[in-house]
Amino acid sequence: MMKPRAIVDLGTNTFQLLIAQKRESDGSMHILAHEQRPVSLGKGAMKSNVLQDEAMDRAIQTLIEFKQIANSFQYTDHQIVALGTSILRRAENTPELVKKIQQELGIQVEIISGIREAELIYQGIQSSLPQPWNATSLVMDIGGGSVEFILFKANQVLGKLSLEIGGLQLQSLFHLNGEYDQSFNESLVDYIQKALVPLDQLCQAHQPEVLIGAAGAFETIGDLERVTNLEFQKLTPYAYPLSIPYFLKNKALIDRIPYGERVNLPGMKMFRASIFPYANALIYQVLHRYHIPEMWISTFSLKEGYWFFLQSQADKKE
Image (cartoon, rainbow, N blue to C red):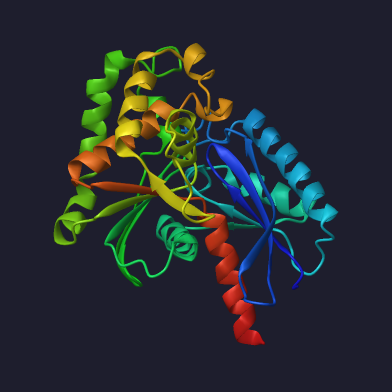
């Protein structure tokens, strides 16, 4: 096998590490490690656009841990690459953090645009789906700061969009003592609906048949469904359907219970419990607004897409 590549997704809420290598037999991805840590890099920065010292310290400590994991796989042929997304695109002091990461840890940081992020997410999603996949599909990747949308049919991208309505962004605007509360649900829904207007023309021109969620909150939707749906099954290792009726049932429950109860639900990851109601609100509005009858999850997203991009570049050089 080829030597592994290590890629870090520097998300606004969560940092994720992928270490993978190419199988010489068929060129597919062999995943060696997949780690995620709740860093909350955007905490305190969603309104000020200034990364807080505590958040930057958490980022550095997490990257030290990720580098140790990468080194355990004798990661020597490529530099670790970290991808900066929404909050690092916006924050005034991003250069300070990037300089520290590159100089102290030797990790290369690339700040990517929202559209480039969407392109890489699409590349990851496409690599996970059962083939042939011909349904007109809307990919939705919910981050802490932004949400990326990609509409495609077969191998043709029909459009892509990045909107600053991620989970932490919504939480910073609509909260009661820092947490979700049903009392402001009407205002939250109105805000989301107005923010989705740029997506309307695209979805009206090409009606999506399937909503494909990229990892993150959609994995938690699957984990919650798996607890009570005896018919739940994964059709492929990295992409599988989710039940919209189970999603709606669990959304209604999550909307009405406080954080202390939500965090203890079977299938709920602790670090997602706080912003999960906002992700649910986003997903429901997309399903309802565009009359999408089917929902899938892909466990591949940005970092997997970047791995395939790097691999394709390496293959061209061979």
